[in-house]
Image (cartoon, rainbow, N blue to C red):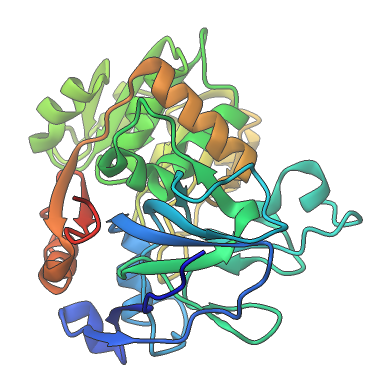
Length: 361
């Protein structure tokens, strides 16, 4: 198996990287383990997490950092102990998680909820493996990591479509599926952007009776309806939107990351025993709300983080079966700095995907 390739990519050295100041440089990947896979990257989605990390928004970043955790490419080296029947040449992908403890006595890892492992949950970038090696992401030529978190991509899904599903897609698919989205359910998706558009797509694919898109501005209504939403609520256009739509939804998924979101008003939309799930991650605290917003209707409130390997495989199977198509804008990898700036300016409709043109031929 050839290893005559270099690990190089776009590295951020300080918070100015989010302003388009990443540098193309070489770096040392994690130490090779026989459970690992090396991927020759063809496509990498740009996720909002990339911007938060580049600017040290959630916490201090371990610079230098190569972001990107929606990675698709081809396996070029496969360890002798690799899982998943992966072979050299297979088209594969990796999402936001690259490792967990995988111990048989771990409550999460032993029940296919590795994404919530509380012992050793390792991010695909800006993290450290148990041996001290740093994790580097997909704005690069190659990626190395544990095979347990590497997935074969079904033939029916294009690489540029598959990439953003591996974080953005499963971040919505997982809470929808786990909270009963399907026939007989009315579902609301708050925030119609990179995450929210996946919410509409997967809520429809799972068979919800009604999908309602919720956003501040009325301008996204046409896009939301084209994505498959049955109705649209503009919170700016209707000052009494919460009253007019009260007790109409069984499940609400919030993708917004503003600490000023009208949370208590969102909760009004839920029916008795409805469920509110937050997946957007503000850099500040969530807004306060009156406890009776939960108590009066027996409403449940929770959060969700990406998805497990089993859920990612399940999502990919559903995507192929239902022909789910994300709305993407492809950008050359060499333009990563400008793409990051444009992402921060909200120009993506609805996900940017970086194409490594040298490898995608």
